[in-house]
Length: 195
Image 1 (spheres, rainbow, N blue to C red):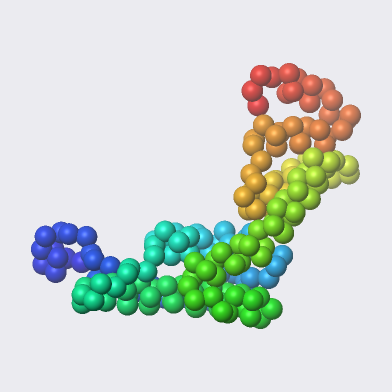
Image 2 (cartoon, rainbow, N blue to C red; image 1 turned 45 degrees about the vertical axis):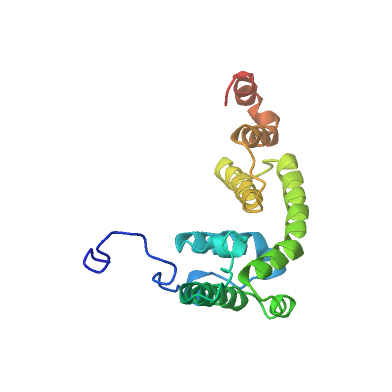
């Protein structure tokens, strides 16, 4: 916006801020199914952050209460329109098995809460399974690059579920899985104060 359109360089009011319609088919890789919730949520959150819309789904941005003035009426209308565009994007990005479970939600925040409630506990169980897998992983007959790739993929998957593994713990898991063939390398690394 040029300074001639906004001579005081004041921030735009909510009613002057353009509505953002999300093109989910080009911006989200796949529809939400129960097993892809962590990846879907990470991708959807990144999209909302990019458009400065995350506050709608988190509940930080709430619908302005109307006090019968035209300005509040416009702000409320703008908020409702933007929220419905986000809600529509969420619905469009879910599989046909999930959409009916959230279709009665009135706001994007309500939908977001329902999805997190339905799938976050599953994500925690999945994180526990993945953490067990990463603690028990062994190099076996894999090459070192293959082994490191498998460990990194597990760590990334765990991080997507909001349970990131520290670099020190990751190093220990890698060293523990190398086996006796790498004892001469592992012992001095473990003896170091910092990884």
